[in-house]
Image (cartoon, rainbow, N blue to C red; front, side):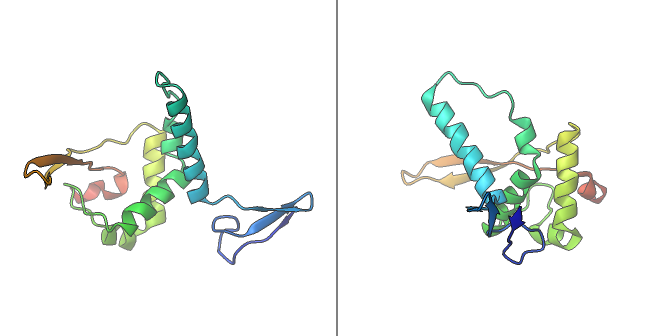
Length: 146
């Protein structure tokens, strides 16, 4: 199998194509995988309102899911939760190590969330809408801070 990558350190992670049986196909990226997963779940839920999903936890701790989640938080300049850990602190200590430890804690059912940070967002009618901001006091990589 011939493989072409886009020059990234991990072939297949970002764009490029691969030739299988003489046909070029786009390589699956984490973003593509997560989007297809979300679309499949959405489609299934819309087809059957009674549909219940029981096998999703392995998708949560999946490396690609966590990478995409991190990129989305990073792109939106996510604020720290009640634990006070900032994007910059995670980047300083190492994003890959943070995500690997988070994945491990989720996979081993050791991840524990902290309290929800409550903010109130003004609505056009003058009332306030409550917004709950989840706080991840795990992974263990950051627990020594507390």
